[in-house]
Length: 47
Image (cartoon, rainbow, N blue to C red):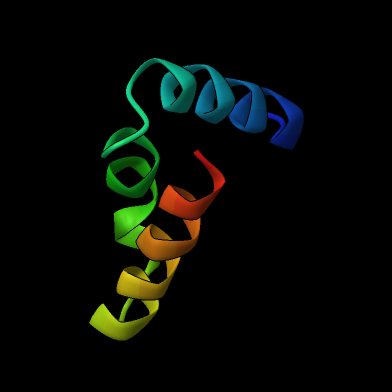
């Protein structure tokens, strides 16, 4: 899947369910809990 399709998918799923969809989709890419926590915090501040 091309990057723009992934970005489009993430944007659509996040706008429908901003609390957990994006962090859930991306969670396998984050190794450390600190990074994950910072990402979720940043995501919630954007909503």
